[in-house]
Every structure is written in structure tokens, then in C-alpha cells.
Length: 532
Image 1 (spheres, helix red, strand yellow):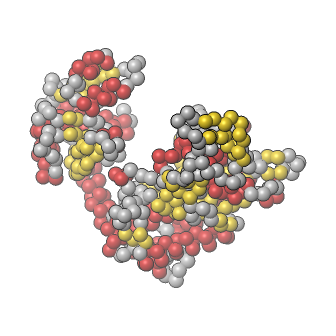
Image 2 (spheres, one colour):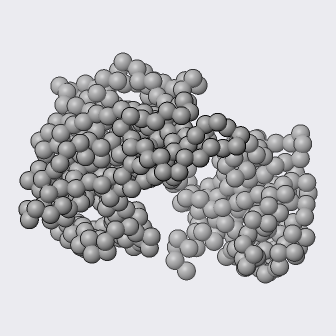
Image 3 (spheres, helix red, strand yellow):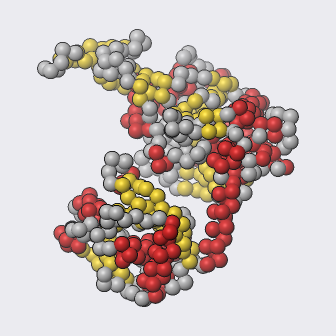
């Protein structure tokens, strides 16, 4: 069994032991929901009987009960059951019942018995006997409030987390790393150095204090300087845009739950939209008429067309900027960098300092190229990434994601683009110097992701290079080729910092805050941050 597979079985089995321990300690009325393995252990979600709760003072008690259960050397039995049998087995467990009822009719349902007195709904696999966990190295380290299925309107639960590793030495090393990470916590250091703050009046939207804003501007200045040397031009666009833009781009259908919506006045249609009164209708309950609106190949109703949304990404604005006039092959590549403020709605439990925010900027770029220019352009982007990451003293790992089953566009263009990307990566990193994720590209094009590594060995996906064959199609973008024909450009989406907020958080933790002071950043008169 591969080490990763073994860890999954080991941690998932320990999650069952955790659930069994909580039930034995807090009574048969405990409602237990799900208990997946995670990167460094596992967790389990519970609703305890009224008046009871789990806190830090209870962790040792639960750990001792888990060790006691493991020492019983109980057999683990897997059983396939019918839907009716499963519902009967879990008739007193509301969350398990809901999970069973939501399964497809033809879904195979399996349960696992640990001893005779604990049963869980689970696909497995698990250990065959608890004695396989005798050397288990685990530690309960925290508990938090969670919502059933992540829905804040549903049951409030207690989530109990534990670290779990095959050996005590690995567990100790991990706890040591976690303690070091707490000392490096960018939220703590940011407050101490008065770089930024958060306030409940704008959740997940940082206030940049004078020193922090000076630092932020130094990063922007450095990025702009590098990009100017590589032939980029900077644009800026409106921060809120009409619904029609997001309908054309496709974001309205796929991203609306993460967008901040600005309602408009019913019945208003923007002046630059062609209105075709093809099939005017009048609802019996309303005197208001509707009409079809045409925008390129997209048709939608006039009603509520003036609804606006704060932009979660810059892509559609860059498409509109390109489209403002006829283009020639002689102009390409066109590189539009953009640092506009972006907004993305996040669930409250997902926000985490600067790492996960609702307002941020990216060192964004959209480059419009001919197929023949893909290779040279990506080589240049990688050279920019090398320069910027070297300045901050961080290394990175490369992932190449290829065509998914639901890809859009011409397969021959995909094949050529992927061949170009692979050739670039082979030359730059060697055939074994990067990872290939077969079929994991976006539906609109293959991509290269750059994962930087910090001082604690943690990885963060920051840089990305994505080819896009779909947005140019949606917006009807063209250029006049050398032979006079009209051709569609390919778009390269590119970021190196990624979110500036997230990058700053990483750098603060990587260097314990010292080089993030504005006077020691690139483009200023201070020292090289690599010397910190």
C-alpha cells in the first residue's frame, strides 16, 4: 500500500475511533455527522446532548478513551446494506439519515462496525482490527463551531480536530512546526507591526495602515517596474459592471454565489444594448413588458438587466478593452496588466486573515496572442516569475494541467498549445522537474500553476499561467491575419504574486515579518529581503 493511501486509511479509521470515544463519553444521544481525514489528521462533527459541549479541558479525556478503545483490539466489519436497512440502522441519527436519503437510487451503501456497539456509514476502506492502530500517534488539538453541510442556516455542530501520524516522532515534528507557524502568524505580526487591521464592519476586507500601505505600494511599484521591462501596458476598468457583461463571459451562471450583487431598477436597459422586440409578452399579473436583448451570441431578458455586480475578476473588462477597435496581427501580443480591486463573497468560516479575503488585488494580466506566439510568451512569463520569486527568496514547484473531458474549443489548437507548454517545461525544468495533472485543466484551456514553498515547507499556489480559448469566443474577439482572414486570438491569463494580500501574508510568515517593512522591499532604498 502506498504511503499516501496508508495515511488515508489510518486517519479515517482514527476518525471512527474518535466518534466512538465521544459517544461513549457523552452518551447514546450524540448525533454524529461526518469524519473525513485531512492533510495532517482528521476531524469529526457532532451535535451533543443539550447542555453538553467539548472544550480544551476535555481533549485529554477523549484521547485516553480513544487509547482505551484501541486496546480492546476490536474487529472492523464491512457490510453492504440496502437503503431500507441503512435507514433502519441510523433511524436515530438525523445526519446519517439525510446522507442516505440523498444517495442515488443505485448507490452501493456500506457500513462499518467497530466492535459490536459502534456503526458508521462509510465507503471505507479501514483497518481490519483496532490493534493495527496500537502505535497510533494522535493528538486532539482544537474544536470549533461548524454548520451542517456548510450552511449557516442549518444545525450548529462541534467539530473536533486531531493530528494523526504513523509515528510519535512524526507527530512531534508536526506539532513543532505548528508552534513555529503560530509564532509566524501574519495576523499576529501584522498587528504588532501595525501593517493592517480587520473590522466587523467590512468582513474579510483589510484596512491597510500607513506602514502596511507603504509596503503594499512598494510591491505594486516593483511589479510595475518588472512588467514595463517586459512590454506590458497597464489598464484600469470599472469595479462594478452590468449583469450583461457577466452573462457574456459566463461568470453569471458559474460564479454568481461568489459575487456581490448591486440591484438595479427594473425595466432599464443600457443604451448600448440592441433590443429586439421579437416576442414581447405581458404577464397576466404585471403590466410590465419583457423583451429579448441581444449581445453578441447571448440572448437574455430585459427585466432586471440593469443589475450590477462588483467584479470578482478582471477578465471580462480586459476582453472589452481589446474589443474596442479592429486589431491586426502586427499588434499582437497585446499585454494588459491590471491591479484593480476585486471582491469575492466567502463564507464566514472560510476567511483567514490575508490568506482568504473578500477584497483584494492581483498582479493580473491578460495577453492576447496568435497560436504561434504562445511558446515565446510563456517563456517570458516564467522568466518574470523567476525574477520576482528570487527577489523574495522563495522557491516554487510547477504543475501542468492538461485537457479535461469537458474541454471547449478546437482539439487541434489544444494539442498544439499543450505541446508548446510541455516543450517549454521540459527545456526549463527537465522532464522530471514538474508534475503533470492529466485532465485537470480548465474547460477553457490548459494551465501551469506555480506553488511557492515557505520557510516551514508549506506550499501556496500563487502564480498561474492559463490559456483560454473560450472567452475570446464569447466576446467575439478577432484580429486580421497576415492573409487578410479574420482569426480569433488566444488569451493568456497570468499572475505571479496572485492575490497581493495572500502573497504579503506568506512573506510576513516566511520571514517573521522583518523584510515586509516598506523600506526593505524591492524598489525602495532598504536592504534586500533575502538577507533577513
